[in-house]
Image (cartoon, helix red, strand yellow):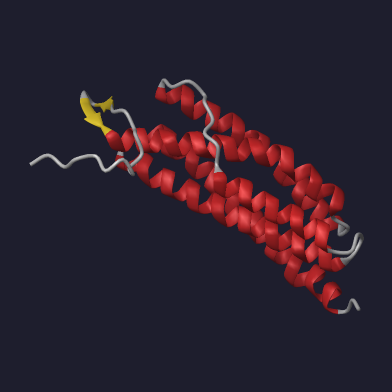
Length: 184
């Protein structure tokens, strides 16, 4: 018996993988489109964090990540090419929400304070953890689909996201959080 469409599931057309129809590949492509939007959105959002930060280590880390993020956009475009797909973004509500939260931290904290820097780190790590989850999940799907070259590209970015998160933890744990704790 064929299951009826309840209307609540995403409408993904099927493509072929090795000559067979694959809704999983379409789910994967949808995830890549979502991540493409997210990374492009970060390219626009990170300069706000740089401008609001005070710690030189934090500013340097965010500037470095901005540069990496531009590279992530280029890698996703490479993935679209490898898949024979047009580079089309799909709005990522999760990333939009995370960046709005980061902007809220800036608005709600004292300019020039270590507390603001601690908030920027916290907001940035939420973004990093989202990206780590997204890249890891897409890496797993690419591997399952036999898209090894695509998986390799995703794995490279995944490693960079993990390193960025680690840098933020180091800055928080070795400097910013202690300075923030001493503020009145």
